[in-house]
Length: 137
Image 1 (cartoon, one colour):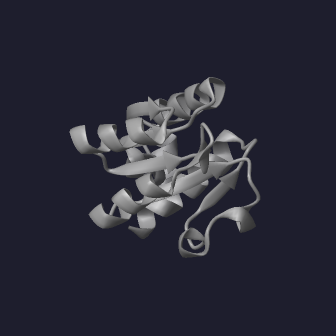
Image 2 (cartoon, helix red, strand yellow; image 1 turned 135 degrees about the vertical axis):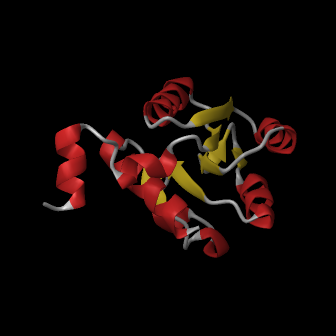
């Protein structure tokens, strides 16, 4: 019997579920309902949420004051592009994903290789993209 099937039968977490467990994830999102949705999905995946931050400056402060393993970034946060936060994450070698209502082609060229989930998104789509991002790092 394959290990994945055995894990499911005995109720053990899969490797995919274990991948996110314990990660400290910075959430940068200015729309409260979406921030809460992201927080819920991450907590259900046993992540620790840092934030959410509703402004770029707040996100940079949280990043400076907390241990962060990964991040979820809205592209436009209260009218300001989130690229300074992306740059800070890049400088630390940390994985992140964009969760945005913008078209993926609107993401600036040097960030275009990052995983992007377009709002509205399902739990499955978000978690698949986020796991892929973490796995790649």
